[in-house]
Image (cartoon, rainbow, N blue to C red; front, side, top):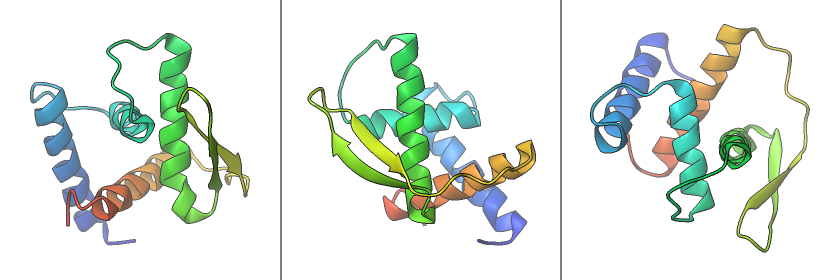
Length: 118
């Protein structure tokens, strides 16, 4: 995608944006960012989610984030408004650091696409 410095700067910009807006300025971690993207993609205003629904929100986000890379494709929205994706390509076996890098790059691309960062 970009060199490491640009990636780090864009990631920090996203963290600052989300942390200030949703976490009283305290840093969010990768999972927190993924959760917020899941909430955005669900598009339902609800104050409390059950534990399994929180996991589903993160799954929605991961599918949405990896969709442009060809791993998932939007399939349908169920009667309760939850999006469902189908797997197109199995995810490669990546080490933890490689997974983190892949997700950060996908998140950066998502925020650029949504015109929240440049």
